[in-house]
Every structure is written in C-alpha cells, then in structure tokens.
Amino acid sequence: MPYFVFSIKPFAQIEKLAEFDKFRDASTHAKALRHQRAAADGRIKVMFADNQQLAEDLLCQIRDPGPSGDE
Image 1 (cartoon, helix red, strand yellow):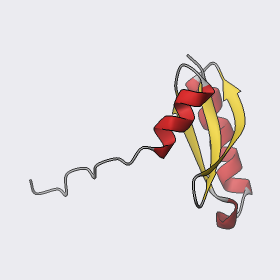
Image 2: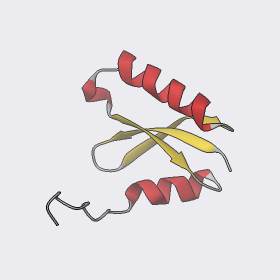
Image 3: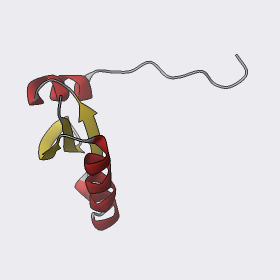
C-alpha cells in the first residue's frame, strides 16, 4: 500500500502532493514541505491507504480525542 502526502486547507480542501512506496520517503518529503511552506498554505499530512480515495476519506473522518493523562 502506498503512502500519500496531502495538503489540507480549511473546509476540507485536500490536495495530493505526492505518493511513495516507503514511509521514510513520504515522511522526509512531508517534513521538507512543512519546513518550506507558511502556515497559511495548510497542514501537511501523510496517510497510508490502499488508494487515494480511501486516504482522502480517512483524512475527513473525525477522530476521538486521546486520554487526557490521568485516566
């Protein structure tokens, strides 16, 4: 399964920036993009999924917050 690098802007505007076979390559690319871009350009995320459609669906899902620490 490939790793997808996305730019996420407000109102769920998702743009695929790259696709990699290895996490290390995707992570390195995402970190470089985060370092180059201004915060106004959106967030950079790496997703692991069977295809681009599934990766975009996973990005749009609302996640439950993790434990607060003392639970």
